[in-house]
Length: 424
Image (cartoon, rainbow, N blue to C red; front, side, top):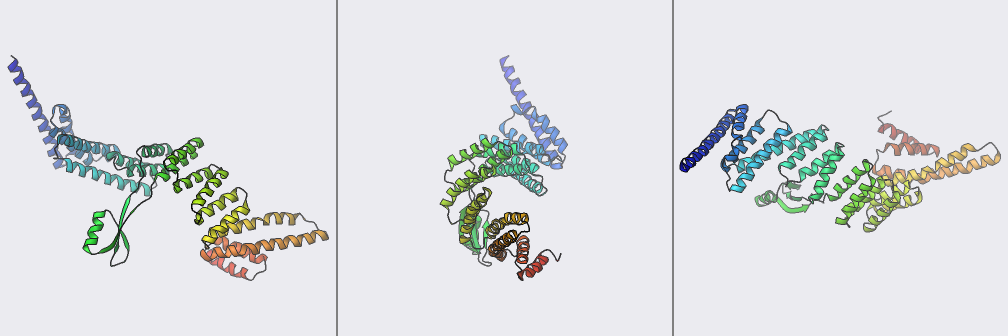
């Protein structure tokens, strides 16, 4: 009796195996003929017996399922994810069993899906559909989690799409993964053109060197993206009105990179956005102490000093920036603007004067003070025009100043302004 039971059991197993194989062959045949619906039905029939199937049949089932989902007319993200998950399952099964029958094809299938997602995401970005681009890039990350760059760009698109909660989720996931985003770049100089050209890999670059078409091979690494991620997290919290969370996010980043100048700059910028200009000034002064020859840092200190109402200090910072970078037009414009801001008080007093002899004398004194302000501002405005001749506002301001000073250069500025404004 027991012998009959064992025989019956093995016959049942054989029947299941035969049915499974038949269903998979039917799906494969339907796929070749392009009949996706029939292939899908065949796979549904095979699915019910999947637990009893061997690894070889399971791998084939998931591979065919990936192909069916990929070939479906429904190009939704759900279908793409279904295809990617099926191909990934193939890789897992064959990795465990030691078989490689479908591994290469599954890898190719995943790569094709990822490439399609990137192309669609780029199209979404160009159309301004950043949220949709973020969806596709995040799915690209899920298909191959070792490629964290997809997650980084998904977060960036979520920020641009103002989907801040999702951006925070992605950024925090990057932080948990220890993501830095440092990439190695390979370049070489084209012997014919003399241009430095990038290569996708060291192997391709070295091949060109050996071929004699390129010389001077070089390798470099990009900067870490951690400071940018921290900045964006803090800015998101600021946008959401969560100032304490913004400060905590920056403090956590500083623990990891206490001497990172880019991070120090972002912390200063954060306090600037929060309106804490005193803290901004304090941080910026520390940054400048580490990089005293950086004109941009000095310029930024000038801007914040001016906003704090310390125009005298602001001018000193701008002038220090100009000592390092004499053609820094923005610094020249800002100095001129501070100088000319003194005109307001003079105009108010002049307008308040009466018709007495003393008032007329006072008026002449104030008028001379105004003209002295104009003459003090002129060199800075002219300097700004030397580096940026198309600065319309600088030209207009100079024209008005020269008219006030009865300077014949006023007509030159008038003609220049007409030319810049298209003759109007």
